[in-house]
Amino acid sequence: MGKYCSKCGTELQEGAKFCKKCGAAVAGVQKAASSTRTVEKRNKKPVIIGTIAAVVIIGIIVLISGMISNLRVPAYEKPLKAQVEGINNNDTKKYISSFVETEREGYDTEYLQELMKEVKSISYEVVSSEKMSSASVLNTGLTLGFATKDVEDALTLSVDFKVQGPNGEKKTMNADFDVVKINNKWYAITDMAD
Image 1: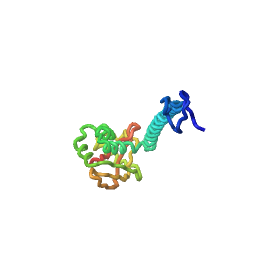
Image 2: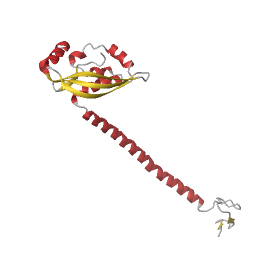
Image 3: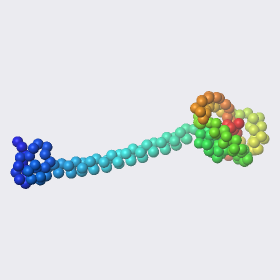
Image 4: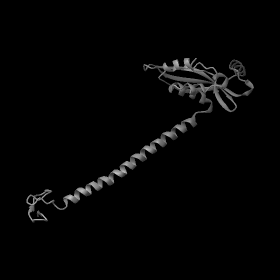
């Protein structure tokens, strides 16, 4: 059964949008088009809201995972982490912040900046830790100018480093990294730049 023009009564061809005799718009076509636009508008809002929600959720996950990774790092590793982050981010202040006060003063930042140019990235894994001997602590305290009576704990960390140079060359090495705890805070007494 065919459709007829509501204006002049002429039979309409199937799929026609306008009457071929009088040019009137075929009833129902206009409504269908506008309802499609309404559906499109309605469908865009949930997509935009969903996208924003996904971005916020991902941001929160990244933030929380960063906080958790900081919590997982034992306190005695924080000076080592500060030096590694300092090198990876070309941040001399972060690097130098790992040292006891007496060692920060007069630090050769130009030498450190040159070293940072030679390293694209560095990562580490602490393999083991052992207490430093009293003699080592005393000797280090005398050398670096801090009172050994203030040292609450002292450790030598055995650390595996993975270093990538500016041209992509990779090198793996193991080194000892010494840390001391003074006034409930850990400091590096080893300088990776040496």
